[in-house]
Length: 292
Length: 272
Image 1 (tube, rainbow over the protein chains, first blue to last red):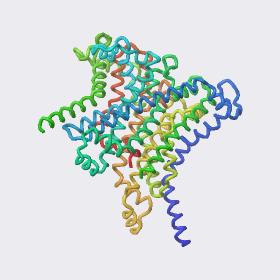
Image 2 (cartoon, each protein chain N blue to C red):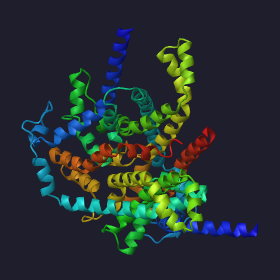
Image 3 (tube, rainbow over the protein chains, first blue to last red):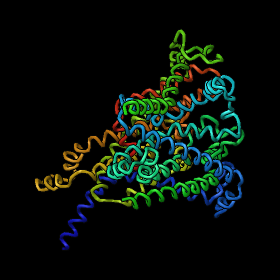
Image 4 (cartoon, rainbow over the protein chains, first blue to last red):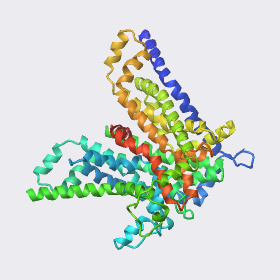
């Protein structure tokens, strides 16, 4: 018994050795920043002032700061639009790609390209396409008889427009996950629905969708986390503008940290932001556990 | 019945074309912008087909603004961060899989989900204090924040899927843990290594946020360089589109060549 125990420990020790270099690096580039962020969030840290301990003051002023509140509202609005749109389109795309058709492999390659393409480069092209006067999108709108849009130049349309870009980028991921889900579904319920004379729409809403629901929820959480973290596209296309109409949580954090250098305050933002994301991560893990 | 089948086929084809149109239109329009001169790019109504097409924009991009230097920076940063992540992450994934270290895996998953900006404040201060800002070292190190947890996560799930009997046979033959890893585990997990390497490369290549904060004038990676072009040449669309295309080209080629690995990597952790 005791021999076995030491043998087990000895074994475990050897396996930990494999992980030690990576864990040291992770502690350095991930854990150290977290400790520092925690420390900084409790201090007043400004470029021109001596650092001093202020307790929870940063958090208190954060919750009193209307800019923070509005950035949270904008983030939720942006996330809601882009998550719902990418889920609806992604499920639809998965149903289409689940069927057999010629050149399906190539069609799928083209379909997933937006997901892999460098966001800064795509944002650049989007910026040109959104141009209110000479942009190609307004040309298309007016040539089919619709009024031209202001896209990202108008405070009222900037968030929906950015959500459109986000949807374009991430619908392929939803499609892939749902496609994996479709492949794993049992065939019996579909045969039963066919025997009962259900049409395609009925089959979808009463059989396919309920069976797919766990996958849809996983996508919803994954997409929500990513939408909250969206940075590149917003930074390149609008830099938070016009005015502060597209200043999301991440942009608010960036401005405080690297435009104003309110290090302590920005660290408090980072912690609150992390906690918000953590809630979704925990929900996702709980969901995965209940599914298996 | 036949008419119905035909109708169904037509509907399916229409759906496929509709779904592909945003990506296809985007790629074609980007190509069109990059192959037209400035006069044609500023025309309204827009000119869709360049006549005659010109490669001037690409020539211009490489001739000015040290674009080649930024390309080399990107190759060093992405290559370095990917190679280091593989060297550290593959053995770590193996060890953690053998240990069944669920808590460590969970911590790594949470690290992956954390907003990147949260890491940047302390790392920026640290690198400034060390006098490393403006060089490539901070970029290689910070890119590990994205690549390393991903490699560990993917490799862990691959090694967990390997049959245990092989190890036991090797132990009986007197092989050490390292030999078992090197000669049995690693060759069997080769497809996992491809997945981890491909996605690490893409994530690092596409990364913008670390560069915008940490890169100096000489150490810009391609996404940062292209962004700077946007702020200085807002009216010159041709070179901008050409630069964007050059940045994206390696990723689009990888997507065509390694589609299976990319799909496996992107959906890993989502479905089990």
